Picture (cartoon, rainbow, N blue to C red):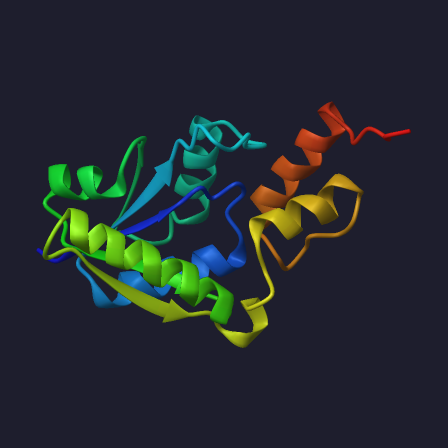
Length: 166
């Protein structure tokens, strides 16, 4: 069975993420959506919340597994016996960063390949950071994230609204 990893922080999952995962699911037997617990970032949603959101928004796909990891992606890939990573690219700036990551991952785990999926034009501008910024200030994120994620964002910012700096 050919399995691939689609790693990310998914804080929150956007329609761009969903598109890349759906496209990977068409070409591979199994897609492991690997949510990273990145200690260098302060996510809006907990690891469990991000996993739960992904489980819900990807429930229409039967060849998806949602997992989480901390540490190196190559170690997670090694323990799963997976030799392919699928990453989405929005712009040339993404490519430069992702190319370095792909080369490092390959150096750390020879035989680990990274395949890039270009963003569809309607998602090329979309990032979790921008979605959070819009939602934080009450902007509409309809059409940028699945409805369930939009509700989660609304709730998160209702609980802890933005503060002004003086």
